[in-house]
Image (cartoon, rainbow, N blue to C red; front, side):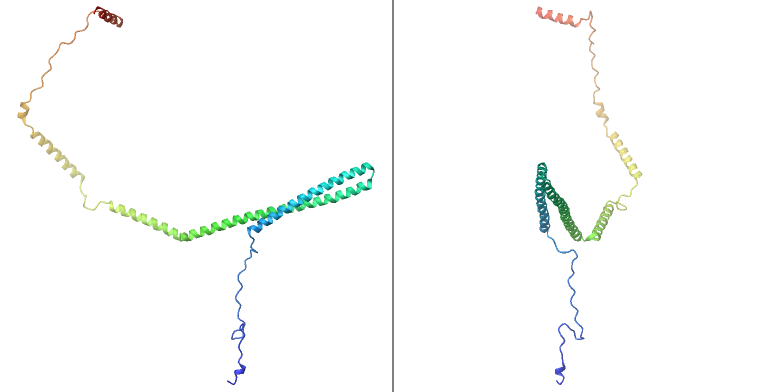
Length: 248
């Protein structure tokens, strides 16, 4: 081809229209910062505690130096060596300044340590709450959500209402099966009772009544006569029984 030498191939990053291809967007970055493990937090707390122990040891050392310089100053003053006593007081003031700085540094360490411990506790609480929220969302999704539960309860209520309607329909008497008047039933019952009484009266045999003997009147027996004579007392009766037993 005569114009073959004029044909150019666009670079890989360019399209056919001369525009640069759009690069894919970078992955979203989190604003939470670098991830800090629980072990690193505990290590930081441990280092703060160790630093506090070191400051305590340094403070004890300086307090001993202050005491020593104070004793030396008193001793030199007693010997009349005022210039040497003054040097002891200067060193004592220098040590006291360092003790004051150590106290402020210890306060800063304790403040940072308490903050880290509180953050570590808050982290555990948030993680537990986040896990609880995930579990609640998962269980809710398994149940189909709030709308699905509402639909289920509605279906249960409808089914219960249908069951009640069916039970009521089954217990309702059918038309014409028991359509009777109570007054007619009572009249028929009285007629049956009347017929029963008549049949009982006509069925009695009078000849059987003739053969029956009348009940005999019991013969009268003489009534026991009332006791005569003097009524014995209990003591007299026992005495009479005793005399009768002795006479036998």
